[in-house]
Image 1 (tube, helix red, strand yellow):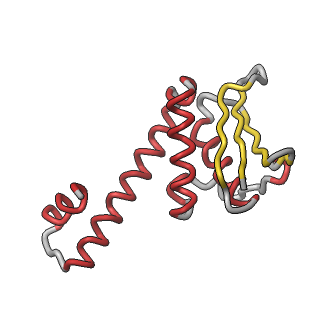
Image 2 (cartoon, helix red, strand yellow):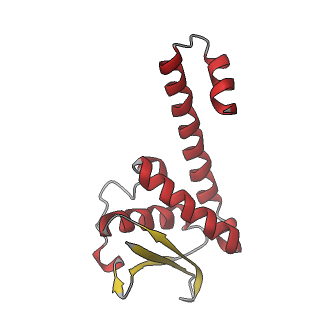
Length: 138
């Protein structure tokens, strides 16, 4: 389903917006909450819409905190990172978010580590430094 995310400043003005695709309402809300949590140093609130439906009012209460980008499923991570990249390439306020940059860096580090592990398991590599060089250069 097609969704839109809007980020607002303290004066309640839209500072950034983007469209993204989610499998369902739950995914849209989780991606939105994770992106907002990661960018809350530069924006004060967010909204998720699907067509004329306002989804944010349906947002669950995260008792253990909003899931970080690295805690999302792989498919949701990909959608969140693609949305973040579009937002960052268009809106300066998103590029200034140090928390978001740190979360994206951590997520990319985890994905690189997983790629190395898969390579080592598939090829039976015994030297991690060799496997890492091969896996990351492909």
